[in-house]
Image 1 (cartoon, rainbow, N blue to C red):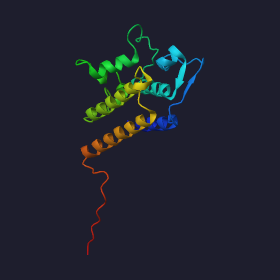
Image 2 (image 1 turned 180 degrees about the vertical axis):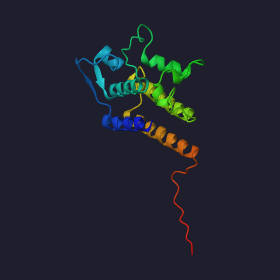
Image 3 (image 1 turned 135 degrees about the horizontal axis):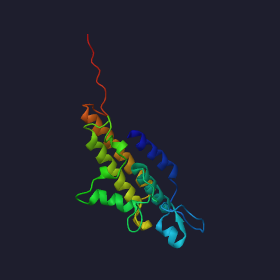
Image 4 (image 1 turned 45 degrees about the vertical axis):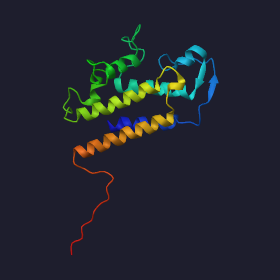
Length: 176
C-alpha cells in the first residue's frame, strides 16, 4: 500500500508545473486519458494534465483501463468508481484491485478497513481531478497536498493501531 502512495507522490511531483498554461493543438491523445475540453475544443492545459493524472490513479488502483470492454455505452471508469463510493449497496472493495486490500489472500487482516478508507479517499481525489470542467478540477499542487495528508493519516492510523506514537520526542532515561 505504501509503495502505491509513494509512487503517486513521485508522479505528482513530476507533473507539478508553474501556473495554468493553456495551448491549442491538433495533437491526438489517447482515448480515456484525454480531458473533455481537449476532445471538444483542442484546448490543452495543465488542468487537462490533472484530468489525465486522475484517470491514471483510477486505473492503477482498479487494474482496469478506460478502454475495458465493461465501459461501453453510458458506463465509464469515472462513473463506476463514483457509484462505488456513493451508492448505498455498492462498495469500493468491488472496484479496487483485491490485491491492494489483501482480499482472498493470506494477507487479509483486520487492517482491511483502514486500507479501504485510505483507498476510498484516494479515489475521491482522483474523481476530483477528473471533474468535467477544468475550472472545477483541483491543481496538481492541491492534489499533492491532499495525497500527503492521506499518506500521513494512513501512517498515523497504522501506528496508533500498533500502539506507536509518531512525532514524539524520544525520552531518555538516565540511571544513576
